[in-house]
Image (cartoon, rainbow, N blue to C red; front, side, top):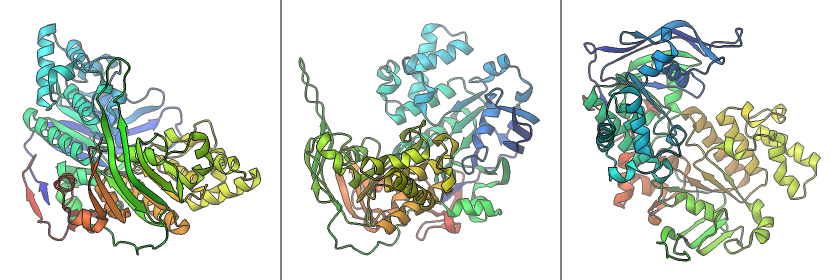
Length: 561
């Protein structure tokens, strides 16, 4: 593993944060959200801010941007200096002028940051129009130039496109272009690669490093992905409960962490070495998929549209208590297969047998009594749980619909809460009163409430920090072993696949390109596409839990960008 080791001692100081304390505006008795935070970033340096959800990472970035929500959070002590400008003393108009010109930010989800009704070229030009005196023609030329710099294809077409017409990776490139079009001194990146597959993630990380090298930008990178940290960080600050508990160069932090909390974080990171396979089960499969195909398009009244093969010739079976993973880039067909199996969309062709029942050609009405046999856990539990329903109602709805009495369902709901390590007395709470990890536990409890034969997990842990991710994976493993549930696990994180899957399918553009035991596919991939996925996985050669390089991986330091 090659770590960055450049010396920034003589580089210009870009960001200085001293004794930063942020408190809840209306509640003076509450514990501060940030307590005595100190951060230094120099020109060209990448400082990674890591820690569990709720540790204060994003609040630190919002304070630096002057974007703390009014009447909710306020700076009560300390100062933030961006070169010669004291941000904590700047007025609202001064901060508007500083943003984009001196400090810019890339958010996790570009679809929420981009205006859906404006063309992306216009949105980049808007930044130039606000902060420069360039003519319309000059602004457009500058926009096309920065779009080329971030390696967008066919820039003239994308210039005129709306955000929804672009892929996730292309939207993130637009955000980077917008952030860097005015050459800011500081770039803040808040989880910019979390929702991206490993290939796109690698491209975005390379792009940020390239732009940083070209413009000499200081980067504050916020992430919970330690693999990304290993690849891009010069320095790492570890946050816990609003405080920085450890600061060190990347190599020192990964080889000799000083704090117990840091060691805990690192031990929670899965590595790419597949876990030992579970014993083969001779029982009848809980799910059998044969020759599954899903085609979009091809119709049209006046003009025949081109067909898109979202998935074709997909074949597999899952035995009770076994886990099959499907991995691949975004758009490879992973979620299409999952949705066909769940009958959220109708397959074009093929057979799907769940609990010995053919479900592929059943009508919605015929399917209803069989729904209890297969359940799904989505990526975002906040969107999949009804915000107006208590947890009790969410957990009881399914069993009651299938004939369980209300009293029995409530008692079972309490048992389920204990199963997922949540208190029974939390049944009367609403989803917004729980953390992200707790909401995902509730979503799992809801799925298990029906005692299904099959559980489909569609990117169920991708948005969670490493500690919570490890807990949820352990919970899924425990639930699966306890009830003998077969599981289909959709993920773009190869580390997670290595730790939870018995078998793996690799998909590319709707086709299955490799299939077999996880130990064989991930440790010795035969197909060049699988090899490229593994090569793109950040920190693939590092054993985070044991603070050393994986066997067979060279341990190096270097000056690489």
